[in-house]
Length: 146
Image 1 (cartoon, rainbow, N blue to C red):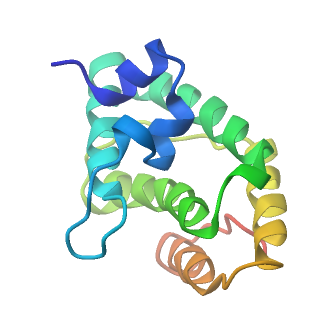
Image 2 (image 1 turned 90 degrees about the vertical axis):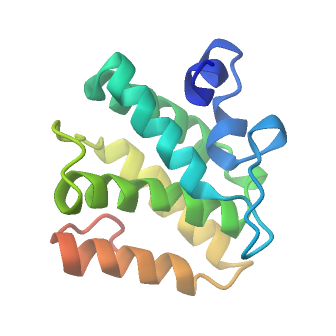
């Protein structure tokens, strides 16, 4: 069976994959939304298959593309996108499952921040702030300078 991220890349459906839409939606029985953990595991397995650096390059492109179209995402989807950054730190430093560093381009951080301020006008952003604070306090990284 082909990895879902690889399948999404081939089908040009990486936005749907990362946002948990359509065929990439995995029902979370506890909360009734998309189970982002399934997406994390597909990412991790994709990185094992093609190499972490290639996975990071693909993620940079895909996240950048999604965030540039910020009017097409809601706060839950944005929170899940930021969760990918937290996922990286957890799997790199806590679980020691990732060996390579993810050099997150400054341009990607800028579009994350721009999207944050856009969504802040319409939604409660407490979960985003909480995740950002975990990244800052636990991993000593200022990802979103908010």
